Image 1 (cartoon, rainbow, N blue to C red):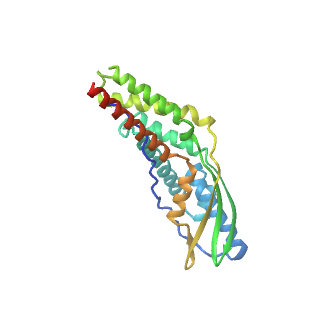
Image 2: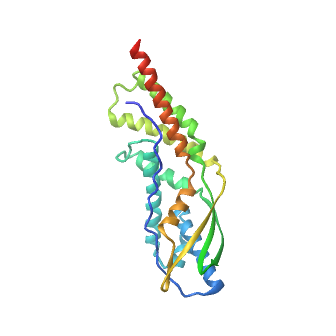
Image 3: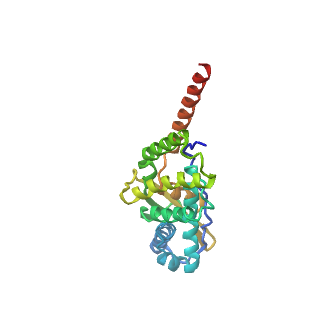
Length: 245
């Protein structure tokens, strides 16, 4: 069994539309919106929830559960992205969650201003996308090719499927763990987050949170898919030539 990468990172909208009481007005309202968006991002990615619980009235347990849901989702997405099979691996599954926590701990953003435009309130957010997956792409690709060469050489013929999957996944995680401390960031992404007001409540939409989430971690998935398709096409052509001979 050879390994091919990469799959697309799938972004799932989270149920984060905490309904907040709308009592402030004018400049105080704008300040409150700014604080809310800042605290929402901080709680989800940096595990910094003090301001979030104070602003929203959510309990610490609720904030902790929201953060754990978010990092677990990233761990699951990374597993899918690299074509891994570690959900039942008692060593690598927790290790991937810890990696996800470390990745998100590097999240960089700023909430720049809150303002009213045509009776709608917005918060401008600047995200500095984590570029880890793009930076390690060549290393991972080299590792996959080398691993497949060892498969062809019969190095894993006597491996059980679980051991084989563990061996492959461990190498991918090693690469990501080794690079996370020295990673850089892609070009900043500017987002305009709408504050939805309903009667005396306010929140942001799942669509806007999805935009934030997609900007936090940069992946050039289209490029990777084209590379994988080209590699598969080349492999098929080589096999066809060999068959004709």
